[in-house]
Image (cartoon, rainbow, N blue to C red):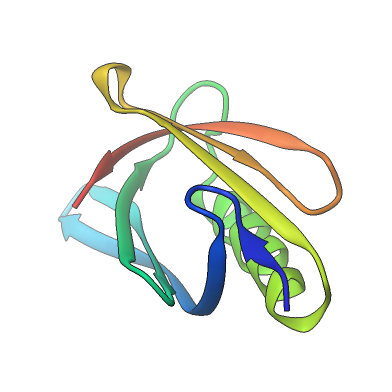
Length: 101
């Protein structure tokens, strides 16, 4: 199994869900359960990443690869600016607008 390089530990399971917050607003709720902790983020679309379904697809594919193979995903937070940086197992990096929940 791969590891989450936020705090290197084994990922047990994850959930990437698009949630309707109100009539005109949807966000992603990302939950990653590890052997040490449970990380939860609220991810919004923005100019860099305008399509929530593509963000959801990328997160699901990257995290599934970590569970299925010996791969890693790296998550770095910059919560002062509401940024979450994700480096996927294939080496691509994405910056998302996110808050911890």
